[in-house]
Image 1: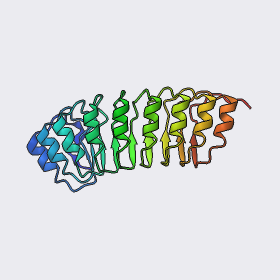
Image 2: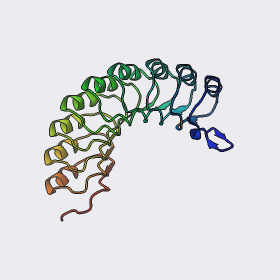
Image 3: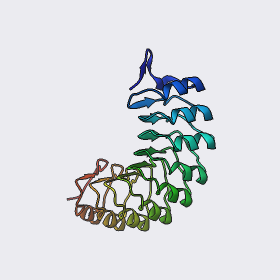
Image 4: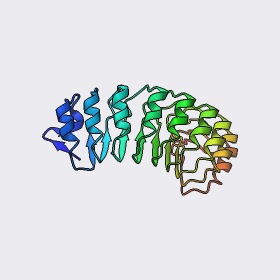
Length: 232
């Protein structure tokens, strides 16, 4: 981590172009600029040269040029969780980011075309943690994501067809922590997920049939932390 006298750089809300150019030369692993609420095109182009993990979680908007620069950045991990809206075109560009982990967890609504573009991201970790709805067609597209970890913890409901599609995702980790209910059919489908880690910490109840299905899950870790009652 890069520290300054008052703490992490995450306390700063603005950065000028010269400072961004200087920071891009930092040789550490992680650069926390989570306090920034704005970023110029020139600053984005400079920060894209940083080679560690870059966190910009307070940015609520970026110009097309700034986003295009960040999509070409060399960082291992890119967090843009403050963005609440991105066009399909922007997401098509962002999906070209070559780092290991991409988090755009602040996006709560995405078109099927946007999700299809994001599914083409070639890194290992994709986080869409605040996305609240997922169409059947979008679930089918996202299931084709080739990375290791898919986080959809913002989903509050999931159709049986969408669950059947997500069960076919070939990664290791699938996060569905936002679901508070799970149909018997959805549980039966998701129990067939072949990854090692399946997360349902938002579920507060589970039918006997759903429990019987999930008990057949062959992964390493099944999270049902939210259950407050369970029949014999």
